[in-house]
Each structure stands twice: as structure tokens, then as C-alpha cells.
Length: 518
Image 1 (cartoon, rainbow, N blue to C red):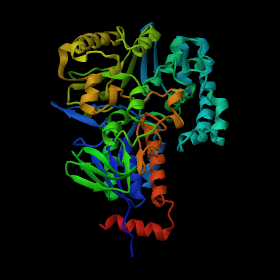
Image 2 (image 1 turned 180 degrees about the vertical axis):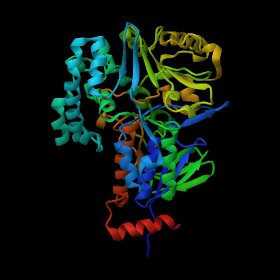
Image 3 (image 1 turned 90 degrees about the horizontal axis):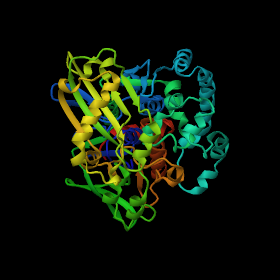
Image 4 (image 1 turned 180 degrees about the horizontal axis):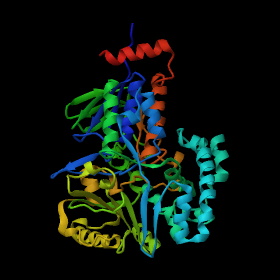
């Protein structure tokens, strides 16, 4: 007699939810993926605007594909057969408002030459930086690949072996100073802390591995936008029998005591042996799980937690093309420390750094012929700063467009044919991002590893977390790794073997069950 398949409900079809659904489905679980929006991907999706302009909503590039390639492999598919990944070279252009540029490249000799144009003495620091971070990633990778359920997990051998390389008392900027004296060069290898919504002057030195990953493994553009990756994940998941229910927000998780038993939507109650929450932690958990059930992460603690910065966004459809503009350009304000300090103290930067995405440099299909799609991002304080965005947004939009003149684009406004603005208030109200903190919980030492909400959510039995609000943290490759950790815990608790690990007879039964409604 074939036993009924274990039922898993996944809340949210963002990158973590999709990856978890793939792995759980491949292992033979009966997975239902509930998504509030009408499309998959969460913020990792590509939207088409009137006129045919295409924009990535959130992430605009793909990094460290190894993890997702392995997830696709576990699901019986090949990532590069599903999505065309174009490796960028240069990876991006850095423009220092105080003077100088770097066209960042993974070619060490060319990158040394780029550094030497700014600071000749710093070029010699590149290869030692890469070698050190190669060792650091190898040492810390086992830590990033396992769950942390309690402080006792900090005493694992992998953690103890990695400590000499981690230097937790140092910031990213201070750690880089051992290799590079010029502050502009240090910024070239530390601005990536913004991927976590953090300051390089406060972010733990572990995160020098962010820039290392770019130089070691490449920066990629998925043809058609980053949403192409999410769509491919959904295709593979569906082929494994995962049911994806779009336009169906989950209203609450139903409990029997502390044990999750079902998710409830407007369409009814869906029984589940396990529930995986991929929705934004600060926004979703207080709505999905009663406060009385949560002991560690109750409403009060969630409200007191530290959150990342937010972002002010402009998505612009431009008439005409912009030859010579790089695919990715980062304008770093001359007084970058002041810029960061203003964000940290809840003040709107008056001379902000900006990031500009110009996918047409690589992928002409991102805009109609003779036109250009531009994505402009400015890091700003999250909603805890109390800024009235309804009042300040028009003025900040004007400032953002003026800042483009520093990149040689002084006349953009007259060429705008489509425009969409998203403020921190918009991230919260439209996209359900708690406090508008687009990079989730801050990644300081007090909110990492066992001090972050666990992949197996200890506050409620049968509830698991995936996404930037749990271990290992934010950023696409890290979220994908988190999905592997979470799905492994779910499968272990349900008595199922991960795909590829099951003995042949069990694998055959699991495969037959995927196709049969029990």
C-alpha cells in the first residue's frame, strides 16, 4: 500500500520559495505554492511596461550560479539549458565623484591596470585580496550551508576553524585597508555591502567575500531579465508536480496548539504537514502566526529588530539609445561616509550615491527598438525614519534625475516616455516589505547565524522559513543556499530523502507518487 504523500504548503513564490518547492517536489513531497501576486518571482521578476519597456523589479544581475545549478540538477534539470546567462565584462563601471573611474573586470591583469590608474601602489593588493578571500570562502562555506538552531551551533568545528579568517571585530572597510590604501579602491571592493543594505564601515569583515564572488565567479545577465530565472524555476517545479496557485494570498496559518496544520486563503483551508514561509519576515510573520504562539520572535521583538536601509527607485522608459553607457554603473558620492551616515541616522542623503541599470547595453530586447530601459536606485532610510514620502518623493525624483548629469546624462527628463516610482512606502504598501527595508533584517553580528530567525522556525512546530529574513541572509545566491538548508530540514522532519539521495526503490516510488494524486 502506497502511503499518502507528505503535504507541504509554501507561502510566497520568491526565489527562496521557488527553490524550496523544486527541492521538495523532487523529493516526492506534494507541494502547493501560494503566491499573492499574479506572477512568480516576488521581487526577482521582470515586468513589461506600456510601450514594451522591460524592467527587473529588484535584483538586476545574477551571481555565483553554482548553487542554483546544483538545485536545478537535484530537480533533474539544467539551469543553462533553461536560461541564457551572459557573463558581463566589464562587470560594471564605478564612477568616483571625487575623480576617477574603474571598469571592473574579472581579468586580474586588466583589473590591476584599472586600479593602477587610480592608485598605482594599490594594484599589488589585488591578488593577495583574491587569494585571502578564496581561503575565507572555503573556510566559511560549510557554515553557510548548514542550519543554526541555537547558540551551541556556534561551537561547531567548521565555525571554529573559520574564525581566524573572519576577524569579526573588523569592518569590511578596515579589513580591506590591509590590501588597499586609497579609499576609492576600498570602495570598489566594499560598496557591495549595499547588497545587504549595510555600510562597509560597519558591516562585518566576513562580507568582503561579496566582491570576491563577483571577481572569482562572474556577474551574469539572464537574457530577458532576472525574471527569466524565476520563470524557469517555476517551469521545473511544475514539471515535478508542484501546484502553483497565483493570485492567492495566504491569510493565516492554522494551528493546533503550537503545531501548524494548514494554511487558510480566501479559497479555503489547505491541510499541510509542513509550512514554508517565503514572505517578507517582518511583514508576514505577525499576520500569519498569532503572537501568542511566538515566544522568541513575538511582535515586540520583531518591532525592536534592526532592519536594512530601503531604496528609492525610478524605472524609466527613454526615447533614444545611450551608446557608451555601461550595463551597470555605480556613482559613488564624493563624501561616501557622510552619505552612509545620513542613511543610518534616518536622514535623506542630499548628495546620494546612485546605481543605474542599463540592460540594453547587453540585451536589446529589454526595450523597444530605438528606446532604452533604465533602472535607477538610491539607498535611503527605511520607514522607521518617519519620512513623509508622499511629500518628499517629487523633490527626490528631481534630485535623482539631476544626479544623472554626473554620468554624462543631463537631458534624460525630456526623453522619458514611461516612468514608475517606488519609494520605501511603496515597498511596504505595494510589495509587502516590512518597514520598506528592501534587504530585510540587518546583517550585523547580533542578527546572524543563530541570532537570526531559524530556517526551522523554533517558535512554531511545522513552520519553516526561507528568504532574506532567515539564515544565511539576503542576496540571491545566499537565499538559494538557504532554500537548500530549509528544504533539507523539512525533508528530514517528514522522513523523506532528498532528491538524488534516495535508494533506487524509494526513488522510483517517489517518482510514481509525483504523477498520481493520492
